Amino acid sequence: MPYTITEKILLAHTDKKSISPGDFIYARLDMALGNDITAPIAIKEFESTGARKVFDRKKIALVPDHFTPGKDRKSADQAKILQRFAIKHRIKNYFEIGRMGVEHALLPEQGIVGPGDLIIGADSHTCTYGALGAFSTGVGSTDLAAGFITGCVWLKVPETIKFVFKGRLGKWVGGKDLILHTIGDIGVDGALYKAMEFTGEVIRGLPIDDRFSMCNMAIEAGGKSGIIEPDEVTRKYIRGEGRRVKGVFFKSDKDARYCDVREYDAGKIEPQVSAPHLPSNAGPARKFKKVSVDQSVIGSCTNGRISDLRIAAKVLKGKKVNSRTRLIILPATQRIYLQAVNEGLAQIFLNAGGVFSTPSCGPCLGGHLGVLGKGEAAIATTNRNFRGRMGHPDSEVYLSNPAVAAASAIKGRIAHPDEVR
Image (cartoon, rainbow, N blue to C red):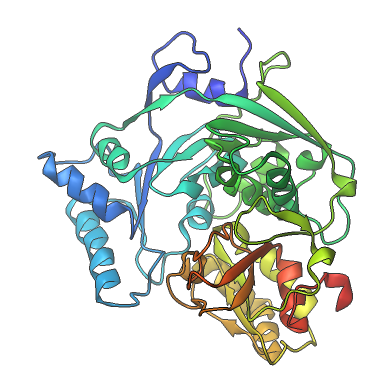
């Protein structure tokens, strides 16, 4: 029976001989993830059951990344719950301040998720790890608690939509633009409970960081997961320093069944911007030139990796941030922070008039380090622009790639990178 890569991974984590879309399965976990917002709820539920130990202390990851370093007493208490639980159960993959990062950049960097894995996380952007050829998806905190206890999760096998990208990428165009264009095409519910499989010559030539960006935003189209077949790009990444080499490289069968197939000419896709208040409000950045911005944010689990910072620095080098605009740079992990310092990127950001801050989800969810006031507008490399997402309900968030966000900081309005280079 022919299978998609998603179906193969799910089948491998059950005791079944075959599965089909729509089937309910009880699947074994390779990793269960929680952060400082969602894990405390899961921990409370875990303890309410009377459970005395976790299923596997090496297969749980706890990352305090949303409101940390603690912005107030409540956030400090949340983080403390994670720490106490991690100490009590000797959780191997607990990452304290100074060793942490934004969870969806940190776990791949640490080599604790990889090809062929089945991963759940009490965070909707857990779908990021599909870039490595894993099935990864977000769940609720109670499902996470059950995972902590049993090491398994109930799932409905999703149908798969194949997205084929042909042609050649244009200047300043990357994975963020491909996924914004895709969401603009199918809508925020266009892949509801579907696996989004990204393929084609463009995807095969895409760097791993761009693949992370694409899979990260599958949830913004309603997707259950995003996934890219692992290849030599994947293999090279997981062989990097500090990363494991093992993993199962599943691939879709040639005659696998898809509920839909979409094809795009990547050469026709320009740098994209998504306007408030949905990621699906996407269009070419050039169409938004009249939009002034009070703040530009470059970072998050979508675009806070070293390649993103290098692109932003390329645009900003020798330039100054507009006097009306704030520029906030948030490297996604401590390792990326150090790379940016050692490569001179941090100096470029500071010389331009930006703020270079510690790894954190921070302003992405309106947490801290850049909350918007009433009537303010921001351009951000984050993944969501819902009403009030980054602060006041009467503020606005525009989504873009790092080059557009950097150019916009210079101009004080949404700008194409060619305008400043």
